Length: 465
Image 1 (cartoon, rainbow, N blue to C red):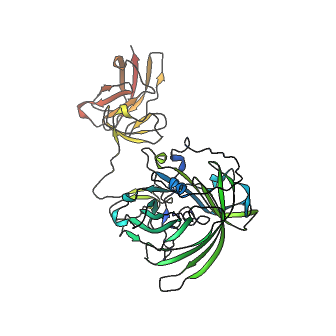
Image 2 (tube, rainbow, N blue to C red):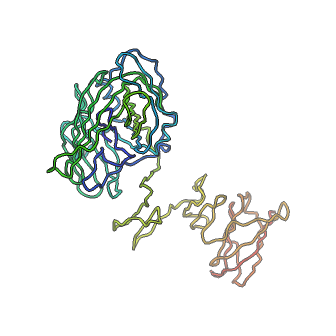
Image 3 (cartoon, helix red, strand yellow):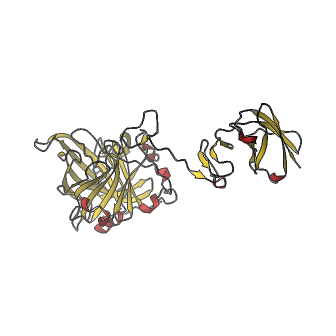
């Protein structure tokens, strides 16, 4: 998710299909981790900008670039290679402002957002730092085996431009890599109307350690005005970019031109950015390979105590043999000597709004595994909650069953003054006899005498005196 020359790709395409557009020689790709933005605390923090139309073009200065890439800022990058829509992209005009708008349903084109956090240069692991960098963006990816990895893109912000100067990879498995690559210009500084420049990106594949992909960007900033995005309306500059893409299998072979495409881009002083491949260079065109970026405070992206795993609909496995999850399982846990420890909680600490099927181990008041059936908590290995049959305002009764010599009868609702309940038991099978071992607001426990282990049914009746 490096920020390429503006007007071209801002992030890897296809919602995380390639690292910075890189494709390995073996077609193994790193996928950007995509976050569900509904889980991020953004709803009450979304900007709602509205600006008056200016008759002069904005200038995006070094101070502006520094502001939207400051430590503590995060870029949320949305991308979809498969979506397209019609849009009026205007025309080249350096004297008259124009207005542009993204569709009202624009965000429905995306399943989630990639996330790039700007961090202090000193917070990059020492072995992964690149000399000369004064900006670093850390992006979460999965490697070709769906293992998490962090990608660091290193930049130098200078008075005349923003330059990408290297990439490094913090891998969960295998050796970390740092590539002090050939510098390429991301943007002129200041970024102004009528700017025209070219930049070549030639990056090293993190798997093969070969330079197999080269892209040549020719950027022309040719119009200005305002653009309406999901977060508001902004003054912006329009740019048209021609991208020539070259590939080769390894460093010993000359590059081959494989495609030339045109892209439109819109950039604001606060870092909002939209770019797409276009079928034409003016008027109503079809836009595709769409990408959109918004800038937020990293602190707003806290997901509280939740952790969300996105593994491309594949199961998650926990094991010591590096095996993959069984195709039928969303969670596959494997061990030949260890078990799964379910949360152990007191009855008073049960969740107040449990999901149906929630499982806990209760440590008091008849300890055991309990699950929530949508209405009541049920103890595994016991009978369901007793169905109370009202005989009068003072008498209730029901059926129960001993399982291994015990049973807990649960009331439909908590009962006050439970100590005064008179409980009569009528056995419906042979056993050593039973007694009431415990009364609580939630119910009562029946146990067999002499530590018996019988499995029989019984009837019960309660009189509230």
